[in-house]
Length: 355
Image (tube, rainbow, N blue to C red; front, side, top):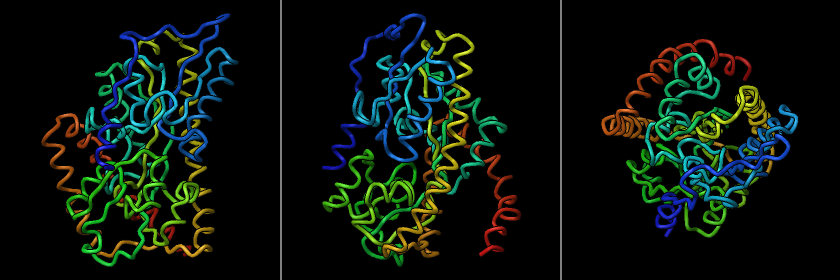
């Protein structure tokens, strides 16, 4: 049933006009529709959208305002990019891999298994050529992308029973996003992708046996600790997970240069704010969850090795199937190969020394 629901929500058809509707303009002011894939009040992911919209309004002195539509209000959660592409909305907020059915290369702009951290992703986008490739891929659909935040290192998932070996994963129905879901399938998990509002009800009802969402702050806010007491960290599949603001190309071209600069800089500022929010409140939430009896564990070595092998197969299969995926992977891995030894030599010892 869950798979049927996902296929129904993933294959979004937006009943929009063939061309972008003219923006609401009064006395030189512009109002755009701004749907998000997430509940607008959700900490981190939802406030990433509302904070961005507020910045645009403030920086433009009200010349450009964005009307935020929470998850499902205007379009389905996985249909934001479709809505913007087709002109049902001028601008949208999501995470790129929610549209990976359009192009599997979009995973790199959200997260890939054993990949870059949040700060490393920003570095790759700004200085390693990642943004140029992202722009090029989205131009194929007349979209303009902006990186607006990152949820930092995520959790691998919540489980009702301890995971002591790969065998404990076999047969589990698990909500898990991205390429991590494909890797989990290779080790015997029945992976499904549910929109955020459906995760807790499915977990509570037993429709799924395990749930991956984001990390301590958001997992606590969604109540996953009420269903399970075993949380595994870090996420092998999402060492970071990017958020995006995406603009319809025709709408973007209609803006004067000053408003284009405001949109770009508002996204950049919101990225910085969101990183600090996740770092602070994840630490606070983990402390609170431990006090409530939640056990935070790491996957056993044999599970990690199995997931590394499965992930490598997934990446190779996608690269063979999609030239865009291979192109982005070469750029991404080029920086990852430099970032990994630097991080192990310089960053990792900091945590060890202060433990």
